[in-house]
Length: 424
Ligand code: ADP
Image 1 (tube, protein in one colour):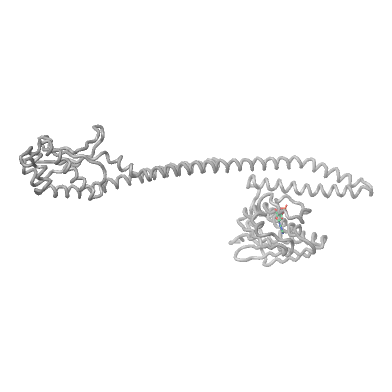
Image 2 (cartoon, rainbow, N blue to C red):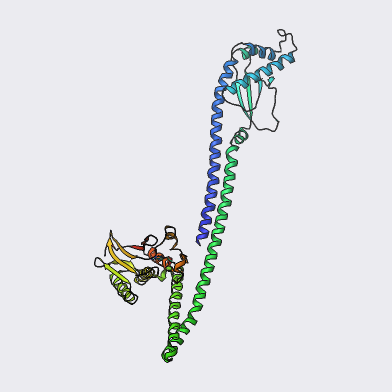
């Protein structure tokens, strides 16, 4: 499976996980709210029982209503019942509020033999699912009628009530989840779009470079034959062709090399060797160039064996690339210091020049593929911005690091550090 699919699967699992977690939170919240409600109701029930136990204004009025005794108030029994229904309602409301319960309720006052005495002034729809709290009254009122008297309070399905209270949390979390999903999809889409574009561009460049190889090779062979046969008059021209073809060949090889290490890692093979002979070779090679081009090249190698788990071919090329750059990006009398030593179980390779230097901003970018600093005065220096990208990849493959110290006008120092083999 490709990396893309892994990311999408992880993303989908995360979103589903988040939804489940949210749902569980909601359930826990709902249950806690129910427990809290029951607790509050317990206290309210006790207060209601106490309030209705003794004869007082309210129980006296309710007593008259349930015994249908209109002798005291000089009112019709209906009015007495109405009034007590309202007063009892207010009393219950007050007790509930005292416990912080603000939801609507209804009540019925009845006996076991199903005689209904009083009902609350409001009533719920018949199809509403109700939660019932029966309270067996004690004291004055049941004694008055000499029967068991029950005050039943009813609440609308509390799930709805709690959910409506939790809506303030559920709706924003659903909205945030949707927003996250949209943004992640958008980011993934543009990321993979870009990646595809880069792959297509890379493939195109690689194919093109491959196609260039054959004609360049042919020109190389033809110019070599011409060089041998030509007379003095045209020799300079033929030499120019040969030199340029050689340069073109080197550039083509660089592009193809980079493409192949990008494509499949197996192209690089690591094994444990002493890298010191390779360093000596590099120094020997560069000393010749330095002599020809009048460069002040100073080199020093400290310590004996440099045992590394590496691909010496690529590591050599990477080191030479740094030396070439030190030469390329300089002005006036060039001085290059090449230093190799061991420190803290690391092999340090340092290439220092007195060249044009690199600005702070560009230090981060020079390792990017195709990146070249566009300062006006070095336009004559040829390159494709591939060298340092290649070096960085090779160093990374060897689990090493590369750092740059530089300031404009004062030269640069590229420092490679590679892990030395411990048990060698
Ligand atoms: P190229 O040399 O082909 O342009 P590189 O990847 O080797 O590509 O380098 C990228 C850029 O970094 C160069 O264009 C140059 O501007 C800058 N650079 C590299 N090495 C040095 C150096 N030693 N001193 C100053 N600038 C450098």
